[in-house]
Length: 393
Image (tube, rainbow, N blue to C red):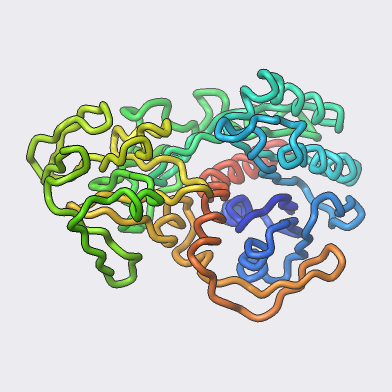
């Protein structure tokens, strides 16, 4: 099936859909650096800049549209302006295009956003989205929260996916809402089968959507605290192919907190009781800046959600360091170095024109990967769209 990608980012939706057998025929992305990655990784696909300046007439015929519209006004970490905000309100630009495409054979539209969509606008933001999509001509609308940890990547990342069906009543089949449907993600950790690789190993993994995910010996802390909250006696070293590593004096920490080695008892850190084993270390605490105090659980050895505002770090072998961009790519299901290069981009009206290849700095890579849709989740949904469509023929 042919699809159009709005708010494409660096292609998480698009790579997943292509892995599921679909073809991307047009993209829209406002950020110049992210557009450069798209132009490099999806050469030849028409790439537009501002979704507000795109009309349905500009776009080719397609079977479905994906749109991971901006989350800033919906996120619980933001000002919660909801769908009336300037950024999350771009949802209505997506539906404007959906209206135009629906008259040309559009079958599905697939949205993605943060779980804050469920509570924004005093709890009615999702209902507003559903009503708008029904007004666009959808015959069926369904939604579901999916967590990336069940799709073979080592992070908790709960996102709401909203499926609109313009050709039937198949949204529940696409999202596998019935327990009996094949591919239903594991409802609990005990029900998962097998282990996904750790983020640093990058080994191949199954994409069945039924994986138990752990990051052995990798527990997150917030990286932006490293340069201003460290105690004396630290050394910065560089491992081959890695960003700088900050090494601690063993069992010496701020406020007298200790750091235990493998097999040794661990004191309570940030109010959470922990115990060390041969494949596990506790989270390093930096007062109010640690992961636990920001609402990201550090239990069960899973990294928290990647986002664009802070770069997580790992505590391993009595050292703390930032996750590298390559590791963040693995946490999102991208191939290694997916964002390492981009095209130089210039605008011709509202159309991006690609130039030479250039290397990309780490900071835009972290931002892009924090904003991305997890590739594995997109692929799973893409396969559901494909099988559901084929079953209806």
